[in-house]
Image (tube, rainbow, N blue to C red):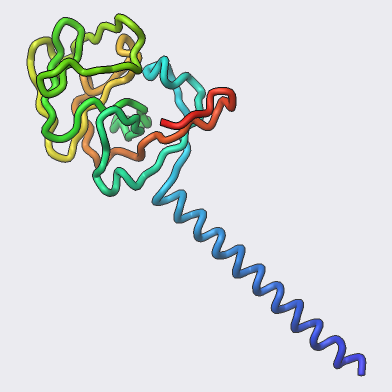
Amino acid sequence: MEEEKLEPTTINVKKEILQWGFSIGVAIILALTLKTYVFASADVDGTSMLPTLVNNDKILVEKVSVMTHSLKRGEIIIFDSRNENHDIFVKRVIGVEGDRILLKDGKVYLNGSLLNEPYLKDNTYTNPGPVLQNNKELTVQKNCVFVMGDNRSVSYDSRFIGQVNIKYIKGHVIFRTYPFTEMNGF
């Protein structure tokens, strides 16, 4: 008689363990899929995106817009710098495929019009570089974006390294997660 009572309990425990194991397995697979294909986190290292992003900010990026090639001007992205350390850079998209960019008197022109850049500090002067020279229009190539940091005086960006091929872009910044007092979406 005691064996009959133990058997249903043993079956219930095994069933409960299997259900929990299945649920945990699904949760792990879902989390890994989201981290691999949808979201990632990154740390800001440096001052090239001041005043928008500050050294040691923690940011959340989404990856879907990169896979669907739907990056937009003004968005902040992270990408592989392709330098010897494969540092990840964070910069703002200034131009997308086919856009014409011109630097004149420290101001950026996009497709013939002065670019409205409310994210820059007042009176920011944009210096030229070997890639984007004064008074020489540049056209953004197919499958590329042209990026600059918001802190133009210290930013090592497309003016120096050239256009960024979308295959090196890791994601588009959507949220600052830390510091908590500065949490906001982009």
